[in-house]
Length: 175
Image (cartoon, rainbow, N blue to C red; front, top):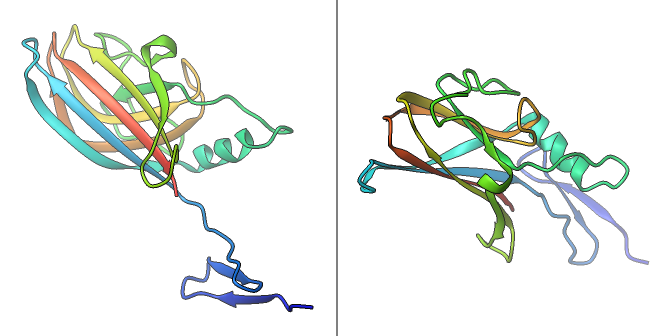
């Protein structure tokens, strides 16, 4: 009978369980935000790609979603704001002027391939502004208001004007 051996790696949080040649995997969630700002003429004014934070409550949501006995509500909403996100919400979510939270038919959710087939959840929406804002935060949620924030990011001010459009693509890769 083969003996099971536990070995500690350099990172004390990682344990490799060897039995023959088998290894336990370490799963990570990584997020990325892409924003494309266009003027009223459709020309690109600015493009940004930013790594984001997967929140603690977001990790708990994901673990619940893979369990029948726990469950939860999947994420289908993108919100932007003019503050700094906390651990559970945006600091100053925009609710007017074309910057209100978008979800349902206004957000396209798909699985895409980053490293292995369908390893990335992707949400895409476009905000069309009727007022100007100094946007500094974005987040993914599981409800039309409040709800659980899966991921968020704060960033240097992105100034949007009336008649501008902002396409937001938010990805969470499981690796």
